[in-house]
Image (cartoon, rainbow, N blue to C red; front, side, top):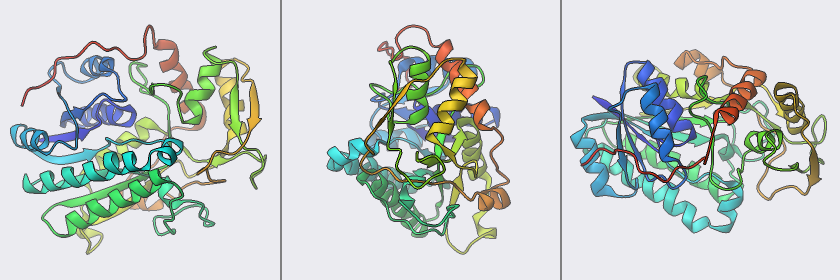
Length: 348
């Protein structure tokens, strides 16, 4: 049996494929490579197995999904494929609903029809919005403040309702701010265009790829005025997804789905992250203060006690290690970040 990993060539998906392999599980990747490099597959095959199965295609294509699920005897699904920029979603909300919600409906329908036993849905702390409850628990109010956040919350509901009406069970993982890279330096975060997340932008400055960093707002009610976030190592997140496959929901809840926060449980300001990155890289990180971005919130960090108690999971890496691994990936990246040469992909 195999685990279907949608968006498996992306940042978190690719690291989870490695974690699945190290746990002795077989993976099948479906990715349209709209925001991922073919080079990632070459790296994944070096880290896992040369015959790693990859299907290039859209998760919204029901016929493709049905063929993959049946041909590869898939018994679990991890759904990462999605667009994920708060600012972009404000400009293209309909596109975000199409990519993030409509495709999730198609996937859930195909998974249930194929008899998939467990769905793991990649969600985000963005669903909480500007909650006044800190740290954030899974029972904190969910009030998304962007179309992206709303698509994630709607996707959660789709997966949970689908599980409730079928023989499938679902685990929803709300993770905070992924940072870092695999210790090999072969895979990491390399988005197309200008990155939306803080750490890739900081390290672009350290690498001399941009002159300075823009700090979006320094008038928040925080210790130094900059926004506070909970950073978690991407490999810790990957291990959380593996743990989600094994948890016995029947022993925990009468529901057929369960939500878990995945984070470090600690908050770090933007200015603190800049200082830590300067120390790790040995480079000055010049920055300029700009206006807040629409949709951004002041502070958020996680209470991860449910994941610790029920999944046996907790973050193992501190911020310095996250930044060091991320920097190792940056230094290890040679040539164009996004190869356009196709890889060998499995056929239907």
